[in-house]
Amino acid sequence: MTTKDSGGDVRLSGISKTYGSFTAVHPLDLTVPEGSFFALLGASGCGKTTTLRMIAGLEEPTTGTVRLGDQDVTALPPYKRPVNTVFQSYALFPHLDIFENVAFGLRRRGVKSVKKQVEEMLDLVQLGEQARKKPHQLSGGQQQRVAVARALINHPKVLLLDEPLGALDLKLRRQMQLELKRIQTEVGITFIHVTHDQEEAMTMADCVAVMNAGRVEQLGAPAELYENPRTTFVANFLGTSNLIEAEVDTKAGDEIVLKAGGGKLTLPVGRCSASTATGGKVLVGVRPEKISLVHADDAGEIPEGRNRITGTIADASFIGVSTQYVIDSPVCSELAVYVQNVERDGRLVPGADVVLHWNPAHTFGLDAAQDID
Ligand code: ATP
Image (cartoon, rainbow, N blue to C red; front, top):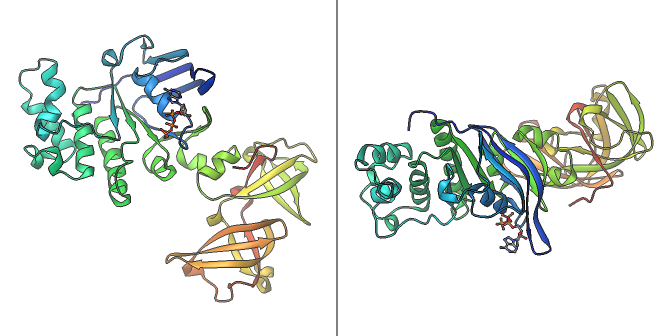
């Protein structure tokens, strides 16, 4: 498929789903930009599949509307919507060969000459050589690519993917993540991908909606979500976060100064989602790879203007490219620090007194009143 098929944005307005007294999806407003690779990310049971199924028309929303470009599709049955879904169980026809599996949608619509289109589609998913094999003769990753080709041949404006890589082993999963990204770039249509795997969502998507208990907690580009999470749930779901309890001391210009233990930490106002009123409780976060570690004897060499805390190494694990340290500090137990091994200092062993320091710009502030998951 060489032409870009544009379908407009997918717009969910006030969409919700309740089953009896249980609300699986709370009223949700969400716009998926046309042509984007969009991920709905969250733990099992957070409502991501239900949201996807409401876009597909497989689930009727309790409230709200689904629009595709200019069209309100809320009342349309699935087959009348310009969308197609790829499921984790590939749902290929076992008795048909790969060519016929992909041709199926065209034949059902009465298209007479399918050869060119099917071949193009098999080339797109790099299975041109496998056309005459049966599904059971292909690997899991190849079968999943057939499922993608079969869905794309109908020229949907939006492709919905429900944990499509869930059945694959880790190595194949990684390959398929890149492969799906390549396919999406090539066809140019909107992909909406449901996954519980944060690394998968971050690798593939331009934009990620992190869902928790039927709500979108935060929406943004992967790097933005990782570097500037707005809730403890997002901070913890997208990797390891070090959360230090602190209290607002002063606010001066673009900077907040916080008291943590006996020391001070600073953070940019724009990176704090908690109240910045003096005395307010804030959880100060910093990712493990943003922290530098020096032996306490070298503390004098730390440049001015860095956030710093003292601690003792509780554990150190060498993992090839980096060493992962666990630090006990008066302000927080079990802080994680990842240090590239090119910078490793032989004195940094369990029991050593250390100083952790980092650029205040890499700090984020969260509302301490939230639960830490
Ligand atoms: P998973 O990754 O496990 O599929 P999910 O985030 O996709 O999880 P959903 O499948 O959307 O979650 O389900 C959200 C919640 O709604 C779950 O608690 C689930 O048990 C509930 N649920 C889903 N379908 C129904 C149904 N038909 N009847 C009752 N409850 C349902």
